[in-house]
Image (cartoon, rainbow, N blue to C red; front, side, top):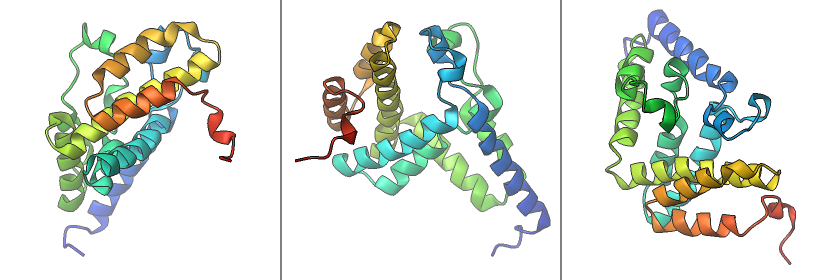
Length: 195
């Protein structure tokens, strides 16, 4: 165990974990603009969970590292514990902090191994140049598309624009195929056992 992981380092990690846990209570704000009541919106933590699952699947299909890609999907929104969930519309009017700077502050009291893990993951996701980052970014958009399809199935018609924008933003062939398949399904079809 590295020397810096003493009482102070453990406190730094514990604080980071409590902060990451706060994402359980942070609603994804863009859905309110689509007419979804705040009580019915997913949280950032719920979103990040499915992003990680999608990211691993996309990476396996695209020949990228599923473990690394799932990590990027898991950590990509940790900075939102400090900045909030800013929508593309909001970003037109508000300058958002660079997630790399935010995560540096979030992990400042943690041991260097943890600081490096988070810094590298957030930088890779933000830069979007590796196959893993491209899959993780597509997973982020694909989760939004899937959630919009779920809302549409529940009778919310205002989400079609979000579905179209998310579909158009996908860059990998696998994500586009999955999106097209999802658009043809009822979100509850998974409950029917294959024959």
